[in-house]
Amino acid sequence: MKALYLIFHGFGLYNGISKKIHYQVSALKQCGVDTRLCYIQIDDKGVQRRMIDGEILEEFEAGIKGKIKKWTDYSAILHYIKENKIDLLYIRSYHNANPFLTSAVKKLKKEGVKTVMEIPTYPYDNEYKKLRIIKLRADQCFRHSLSKQLFRIVTFSNCRNIFGAETINISNGIDFDAIRLKKPVEENSNILNLISVAEIHIWHGFDRLLRGLAEYYKTGQRMEVRYDIVGYGDEQEIAKLKNYVIENNLDKYVTFHGPQYGDGLDNIFDKASVGIASLGRHRSGITNIKTLKNREYAARGIPFVYSEIDDDFEDKPYIMKVSADETPINIDNVILFYNKVKALSPEEIRNSISDLSWKNQMEKVVLACE
Image (cartoon, rainbow, N blue to C red; front, side, top):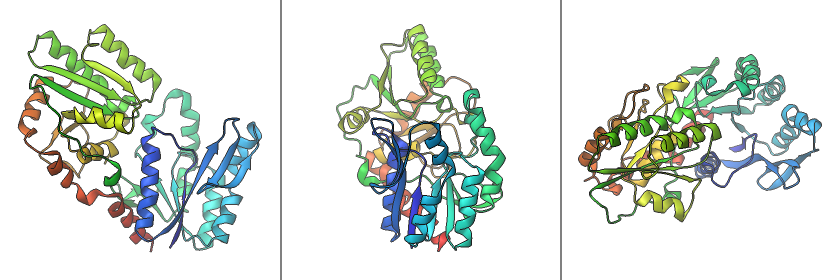
């Protein structure tokens, strides 16, 4: 089988989405699928090119004309698929359903090419801010007609049908070779280190943890609880979090590291006691989701806290569930949780998710499309 993995953007050095896409492509290859990756590259002068595995497929002129062509003309992709006898087109949704993409997928369907579209988060309508509402409205107008032409929709939810299309249900996976296990460090029994690593948005709910810390320190507790927040994201949300820290005198306990990778990120994880995953998915109307972050914490070998339903972890001994609402996180409960699970080794936690490799997850897609 030959596949083309199509995305509508480029890659970022610190970006978890970028890493995930490369892991998926690698996993497809491990499953025996001859896979090529199509993406957008923007050079220092702002010139945009559609690339396939480092080779230029087409170049877009600067200005509005080039942008329109990029989003409406898929002829170069269709030609490449035909010339290279591609069997499977794997699209990562950019919430960009439109008549032009629908027409392209319809043509491929007539040629016997199966097209699947991954929707990374579903539902996603509530994640849109007012400034981006026009993009959402366009997607809402055309996503059902696009779905009629798809072979399947790949989802990390439990939904069996999305926008009228049957689904392939998978979990976010892990490339275990790319994530280093937490190394043991000398710990101070009077200090608990919490960590969040994310592209920060309101649905991560980190404000709930900060509000819990503010309440905790008002009581003059003996154990010091520190919180490392790693990553970039929504600048307004990050500014709100930073302002809250200052206003509540949490500067001594909360550190914003910005984006980190490699040894820098590994070192922060080594001293981490508990991971703080999503605490606000209910803000997006999401109940069930299989987030990448939960799996990365487990792969690192650290226990973690989250509020949604994640079927891969609900019965694991190293997770703490908190309510999916707006209440501050009770830090005393987090301390009690850590004291219960600290005897578990990083190896034990990591080994419990050996079935969640990207190869195992993408194999579900391959089998469904054969």
